Length: 227
Image (cartoon, rainbow, N blue to C red; front, top):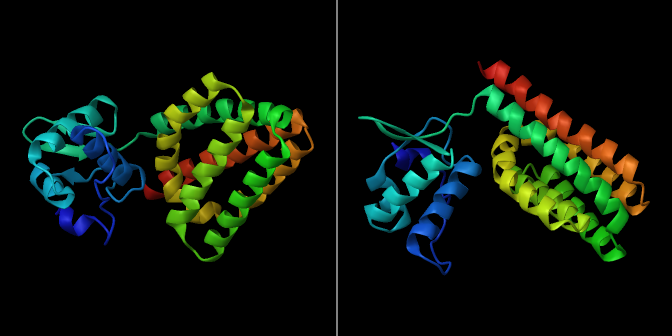
């Protein structure tokens, strides 16, 4: 049952402003991307509504939108299920991520100022502490924030928009391997910061490409081990 499938405190409070259906959509998407709702898990409208403290109508609308966006599968006579990504889907998404973020790193090396470098340093310090504390959820969130900051420092609005479109799905794929990537991921982040701080676009590109490729390979290795 859903009530046994969600960790204690996993359900977000719907306190943000905006249309209710949008808040329900965002709440469910957060639960999916953090894997509080796991791939293949059955989603029961009434139980979701109870957890979120809303009626079934906005939940139904959110599930339909999540289905359109590829996060949920609606199966006739069975109901809604969290989508289970195929290896090909993951590979395509993570390959695109490598292309986008390698270019973001190159541009960041050109445009980043000391304030931006300091922001990356702070995120890296926080991420290292999260890994040391074995706080996977915080480490995943800080990893996403670090990569988003690199993209912001690139100074290209179109690139930032494209990266944001894939960012949540990257987090979905990264979460299962976050503990395995662990300290090494943040060592690579340190190497990236050094390249950006030196204004070395070619080195920043190479470091970011290798960094994202490590995650992609580890995801596929884990996927094969689970098969």
